[in-house]
Length: 156
Image (cartoon, rainbow, N blue to C red; front, side):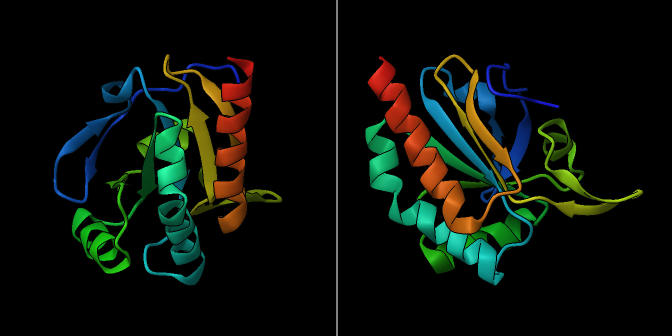
């Protein structure tokens, strides 16, 4: 299981435009990744739109935002256009990245349900996780990301 201070595993996922996006493409920038269960659902709309609304603040911290789900690139493109999201949405159909990051499957006693756990990770310019939470509320994920960026800037 990943923890704060670990190197974030690299990945190569397809974005809403069919282009391959790698975490390593963003070395030198902070990266906020949020995982969401399903595009166009109430909680996911709230989360994605909250990141949209905070986007100027996040950008001012030299940060990019990436949303990840198992939705297809075409579903993500429609959602991105409908909600006017200014950041990439990535498709992890086989859950490889989500599993590596600990956000695939919800434990309920003896079994693990095959669903995405809403989560957030904040990664520094060198690829190190500076904050994260698996199982976070839509609004709390954005608030957590902003706090982590502010704290990182205060330490610098």
